[in-house]
Amino acid sequence: MLAVTGVSRSFGGVYAVRDVSLSVADGEVCGIIGPNGAGKSTLFNLITGHLTADRGEISFLGHRVDRLAPHRRARLGMSIVFQAARVFRGMTVRENVMVGMHGRTSAGFVSAALRLPRHRHDEREIAAQASSALERVGLSDWADRPADRLPIGQQRALQLARALCARPRLLLLDEPASGLRGQERERLAALVEELRAGGLTILLIEHDVGFVTRLADRLVVLDLGQVIADGPPAEVRADPLVLAAYLGQAS
Ligand SMILES: Nc1ncnc2c1ncn2[C@@H]1O[C@H](COP(=O)(O)OP(=O)(O)OP(=O)(O)O)[C@@H](O)[C@H]1O
Image 1: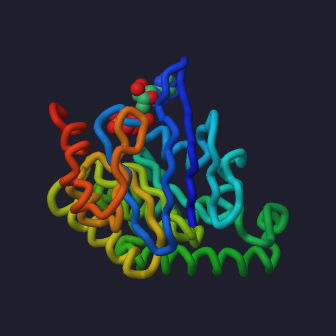
Image 2 (image 1 turned 30 degrees about the horizontal axis):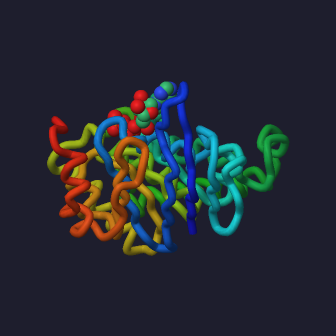
Image 3 (image 1 turned 90 degrees about the horizontal axis):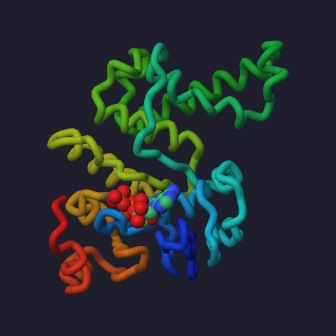
């Protein structure tokens, strides 16, 4: 589904990502881990299109995407949940999910402004899709409540619902467990497991190695911008190179 081949990116002459290759198969959950400064965020942004590579190729569903803007990659089926994403205040949970879906409907802005029948049909369609996404993430009971009252764990679930509305082929999660503790983390892990069981392909970068080990079919480990291990989580975690890279890391 996704193939990254020989991708490099440097800042001020220093490599953040160097000659990285990895692939994600259909239905797979792939985790990218690595110590601080390893290049995880840079690689994530290269895949989403928020950064461009100096060298290398990125293909998604058979299309070369490495020169495409983020919204064009999104249109092909990449959907991102950003780490720092917030909910919109003053809106309900359902409205938060519906926002952003309007641009994707067939009727468009003019018909929306004039409130033509097609627009009303689209509105119903959008509301139905939002409800189904909220059900998928277990937020149905919260749909009509103010989004900013949600606990942080459920705000993360809301962001997932928003991403699912785009019917992604590949879901990209940026440190989904950050800021979550105990039960909230468990709930999010269970949710990602459910999405995986439903056949969704997921790529996540994560600081919390325990969280990602449990969820991923495969782990790719970066250190100093390069891939130092790639394989099943249990194997990768026992790899001497990986253990050495994490040695002396405080977190
Ligand atoms: N916009 C930038 N300008 C200059 N240097 C950058 C930029 N983005 C990243 N870097 C550098 O590239 C290297 C990799 O950073 P990156 O943020 O990708 O690592 P990371 O693995 O995500 O780290 P962390 O876990 O701390 O978030 C670091 O040395 C960082 O300082």
